[in-house]
Length: 220
Image 1 (cartoon, rainbow, N blue to C red):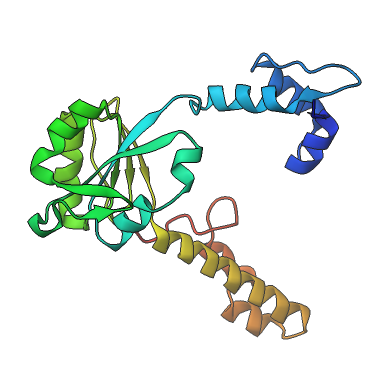
Image 2: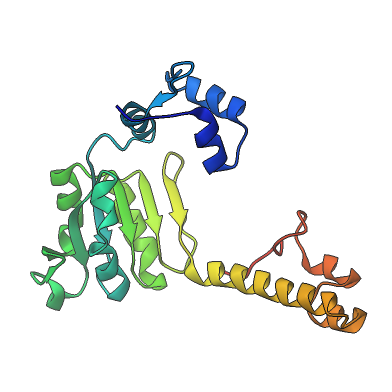
């Protein structure tokens, strides 16, 4: 039976082995001294705590290019997430199969959620439609929303929203690229002038967040 030691796990995760053992103790997994942790059982315990040992039906609303790509993503099923329905407001999309699932019209949204016991919804609509879709999802009983629309959603207490904004992620990467370019220019002896142009000189603190890493405010 495959096992793994806390030292091996700690080295892979870049953490202290004593802290890792303490964290695992909260899962009820103490391991065996001199042997380590049963890998299969440890994976089960972590999956259980993350809620991945049960089936989570999910609806995706907005089956454009992004929604269709999400529907075709193979990683959901392996983590316990089952795409129960695809929903779109375009009547021409109704009945068309995407990833082997027929698209259903938005008029059926509430019934679909009730029939499938859905608590997690994914919004991949244009920004202008996202809040109305969100309100309908919440009204139908959805309590967790993954939002890909480029807008901020307003939800009542008890509803969790995770926003995925790819443009902001790219902006963060661009910031790090600019910083690295500035560091390289400074290391090559380009002097303070180049450092100021790339935002790595003494004036750069005005453009940095409180942690001195990424800007405190990133445009949405």
